[in-house]
Length: 275
Image 1: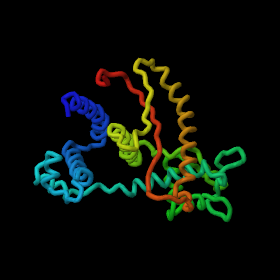
Image 2: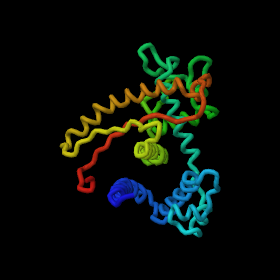
Image 3: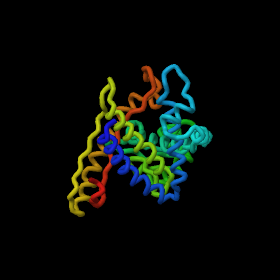
Image 4: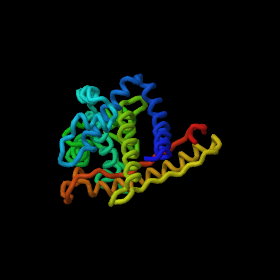
């Protein structure tokens, strides 16, 4: 690996660490805690993904790969991984419910808009929606979460009406921190694959951006292309849902994979640090 290659990598790491550090400091995470988390991931990845085929991954080899002492590797292996399953499940279930409500004809009116649903009932109901797309979870638990983030509202007659086009955790909610782990991870995984494509080739990765825009352009840009992006995402949701075994158990095929794509905006004052 050449010096130019390493310098480019170091520069890229510094750029991605800056917003991450801002988030960590804002949430009271010390460098010591971050250091232990980073060491844990280093040891975990080195153990699971950088082994020699047919040979057990030893502490000495992990030490060599990561640059950590053998004693430190053994210490880090004893650290517990933060439990995130409950947060992940809550986010996934709520997102699936809203997507299905906007997608499935049974829950739409003649113009294609989501209809208000009674909580219970033999016909189309909120409870049926939850049962079909959120598994064995009490409808009230999902309703409370969707009301908490402002995605639904209770009407005067007791029906539940959808207000949002997507599940977005409320500001300060731990669900938004969950997005930090999932969304950024998917982007970095795509970049990793595109740096080392392999036989299957690279994945689509594009962006558009300019760095000398006046303030009054930003609100218009966001409003105009948020609508276009949402329409595109909903189209992809419909296509993928027809091929996902959780949505349709009759789907056949081998393997279990996750796939999708994301859209995000970025806007901030220009800084020489962006060069």
